[in-house]
Image 1 (cartoon, one colour):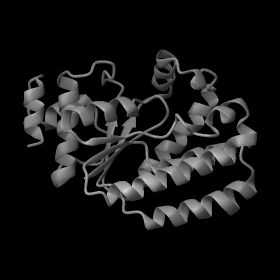
Image 2 (cartoon, helix red, strand yellow; image 1 turned 135 degrees about the vertical axis):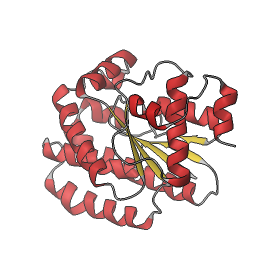
Image 3 (cartoon, rainbow, N blue to C red; image 1 turned 180 degrees about the horizontal axis):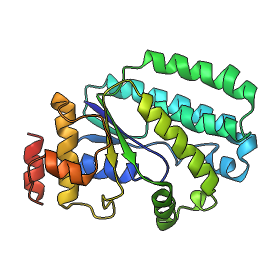
Amino acid sequence: MFIIISGPIGVGKSTVTRIYSQVTNYEPLFETVEGHPYLEKFYLNSKEYSFRTQAFFLWDRFNKHFKMVNSGKNIVADRSIYEDAIFARVLNLRGEMDNDDYYKTYLPHFKLLTSILRPPDLMIYLKASLDTLLYRIRKRSRDMEKDIEPEYMRLLLENYEEWIADYPHKKLIVETEDLDLTCDLHPEWLLFFKAIHQKVLNDELPDEVIGLTKLKQELPLIHSSREKILEIFN
């Protein structure tokens, strides 16, 4: 089983990936930040390093995705290769990746590589407003993110929303405005994981944006204990 947690910067992908893996014993797969040869340089000079940064992410994610879908393991991944094109497009729209790099080199490689891959069993999109994303980014205080511009985040969010609306495979869109991503285990997490489990097994839940209020209407009440949530996955 291969599940991907997707969404814009600051929405909580790494937290969800980490906790889901701990609860279910799925193997977590995080994006390469440590050891990325261009990322820090990109944040200092985005126009100079945009293509190289995105090219590295593209190949790295293709390599991980290809290996994971053929591993036979249960995997939950933080971000996907499909989202790489969103960042590349935004960089092009902002004039930080030129047209030749984007249209003649990046996009043809992206289309070829993604055509080779088997899609994940489920794409989970974490949804949040621009104000919430900016708040969460400030709260976690990562050095490389301290100078992210609100206008960049607005453009990124718009392109993410367009992407997930057109994503053709199995997906679950979860509104996180009312989901506390700062507490590791409580009833809200249990409802969220129950929704993931139902979507993977029988696709009973719709693809539409689902917040906790609707989850509570559609799913049975689950008590806030680790034993109860583990029963879901047995």
